[in-house]
Structures are given as C-alpha cells and as structure tokens.
Image: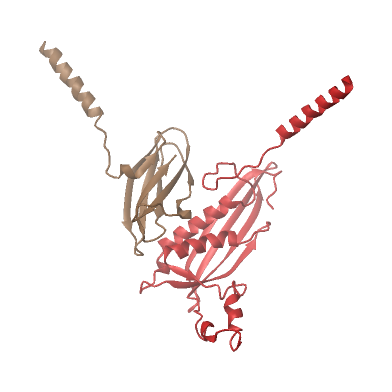
Length: 119
Length: 204
C-alpha cells in the first residue's frame, strides 16, 4: 500500500515539474505562430540617440532549415502603431538547430513599446 | 433557322470562354507580398535596401546633433550603374522620409547633386523688386540654409554565370554620408542583394 502511495506521489510530482515551463517576462512582446522556432532571449535598451533598440535571438529547434519572416511593430506613447518602413516583414533562413541574432531599432523617439511578430 | 441558332450559341460559348480566360488585375499588398522574386530589381529590393540603410544610419552616432538639433541633409548624386532603367528616388525617397520622421535631419531641396530639387526657392527670389508682389512676403537675402551633410551613392550590378542554365545577378546598394564642412564620410553603408535564377530570364 505504502509503495502504491509513494509511486502515486512520484508520478504527480513528475507531471507537476514537467508542466512548470519557464515563461520570461518579455514573452508578451512576442507573437510567434511557429512551433519549431523559439525566441530564446530578448534585450532592449536606449541608444545614445535616445532610440529604443531591441536585440533578440531566435532558435530553430527542428532538424530542417526554416524560412521565417519577422517584423517589429513600434508603438508611440498613445499606443498607436508608428508607420515606418522599419516595420516591414523581413525574411531569415535558420538552419537546423541554429540560432540567429536579430536587431531592430525604433524609427524615432516617440516609440515607447513594440511587438515582435514571427511567422 | 437551325444554323442561325447554332451560330449564336457558338458565339455565346466562345465569348464566355474568352471572358473567363482573361485574368483580372489584382492589387498587390506591398506590406505582405509573398510572390516569388524577379531577377531584376523590384520594389521589394528597394524597400529592403532602404530599410537596412535607415537602420544602419539610426544606429550610428553620425546624425546625433550635440545640441539636440537637426542636421540639414542635401541629396547628392546617386549613380545607377545597373543594366536597368532605375529612378534612384525609389531608394532615396524612402530613406529621406524615414530620416525626416526620425527627427534627426531635415532635407534641403534648394541644393542637390543635380541642382535644386525644387526650383521655387530661387524662382520666388526673382520676384524681388517686382511691384506686383508684397515685398514683405518675399524672402530676404541670406535665409537659405546650407547643408551639413550630403548623401551620395551608387547602385551596382554584376552578372555571373553559375553554370549553363543558372545566372547569378549581384546588386550592391552603396551610400555615403559626407560632412560637407570637412569632406569626411561620417557613415557608409552597403546592402548586397544577390539573385540566382534561370539564364533564360533577363535582368534588364
């Protein structure tokens, strides 16, 4: 009986630990519709020219080369999207199990937030 | 009678087929165009090149004015050294718009590599002493602002045969930002766009 209870507790703990995924605080800034591609790290800082710059790295978790496209939509202080060519879609090829380092810079100082779209 | 009906029927069928076969034009969504690329330069290449150039300029400290002001930029000559007939404004206009919106520069249209872009600045000055015009509305001497920086560049094309069936076309977009006071290039950028395709397709 004791063995059965311990086994049951062990199974519950295993399931509990497996579902406890690391969810970084910047995850809400990314909209990724690709399953095999993940954003591992995202850093943002203000450049000397007071423009917001975003650096992020994307990993292709699959065993085949993935052709992804991404764009960064910039929002001003009123949360309105800023119309700029810097928000155009960009294509990137990531070979299997590889990481690419991507950067984006805000078009002007009025930008206060952003969203990264990947598909 | 039978023949007349037969002819009319045949006419209707043929005209219906012809109308159905005519492809209707579609408007391209320039923000979400997934059509395959062409060997020549198209709007997506100019958009990609200008985006990369603007990002590079904004990341560099070249256009950060120490007093927080804007620099005055003049557009010099942008050479088209490709086999295609290109209006280089397809590249430069996008860059100008973004730099203007960035708050870093204002662009002068009173001087340029091919003369004044907007001759009105000079035409209006010809009206000095013209009694038909209220002279207080005519600009006085010494009001035009000279540029601090000049933007010049070149678009290059090189064709190479990969094999008997495949051709590679290399395009290079090159731009330089020169401080006109001392003639030094404060920023330079190059965006290569390389295309590989059938030798049967032409790139001019």
